[in-house]
Amino acid sequence: MTAQIIDGVALSASIREQIAQRAAALTAAGRRPGLAVVLVGEDPASQVYVRNKVSACEKAGFKSELHRMPADTTQAALLAKVDELNKDSSIHGILVQLPLPAHLSSHDVIEAIASEKDVDGFHVSNAGLLMTGKPLFRPCTPYGVMKMLELTGINLRGAEAVVIGASNIVGKPQAMLLLQAGATVTLCNSKTKDLKAHCQRADVLVVATGRAKMITGDMIKPGAVVIDVGINRMDDGKLCGDVDFDSAKEVAAWITPVPGGVGPMTITMLLQNTLEAVERSEVAS
Image 1 (cartoon, rainbow, N blue to C red):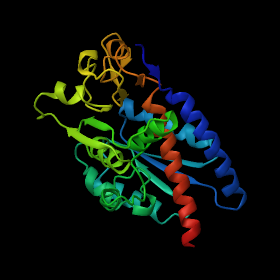
Image 2: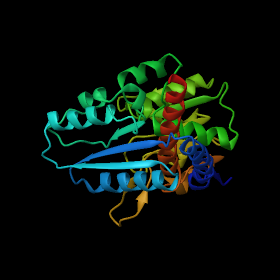
Image 3: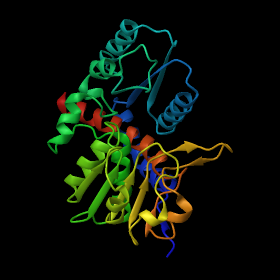
């Protein structure tokens, strides 16, 4: 068996075409979608991520603002910038790029973003709404994973789903979304005993650990769907995921590559969330 590839680049391109059409209609009606990104410091990886987000916004016809702040920015200055963007009616989504410099409180900054502009879906009120099954915004990476599964035609009702990694950004919301889709979900963390046994019973395996090639083919149930959220740079400069792709693809039925899998979908769902924020504000007004 050789797994079929879930092509995140192709899927995201199709979704972005639809987003661009909806954005054009909103712009014609005088409601151009606006996304503001705040970047603190000079972290190289963050700069790449932000550049990709800004480029995607511009290509979709969104208003895009990038607010750069120095690494020694104070908490008060950053909160003041967030407050300014909260009050700007032309901005429908606010994203503060993480991680922040160590002297800044990510929690306090995220909580300062107006929940109706929290297109990352990290605000505590949005996390709570997700828990109740009525999310305002779904966090972008888990949302992208769900969209990939949907567009690939994978039936989650009654499926055994295992999520490896219990972060607030990916693992926990991913488990909630899979549960809402009808799957039976196991959420594994760094203390989980016999991780291999959990993996081997998964019909759908989502891996988000930040450890390169941690999950190997012998840990995967034959015919499983494997979603690799991780992205790691090896010593030779090449990128790889948290799954050992070469061995896993010989066992799985479906698998996402790294790069070109979940990554493009994350940015696409950021655009989707921003678009939903505009359309929701239209209804509210």
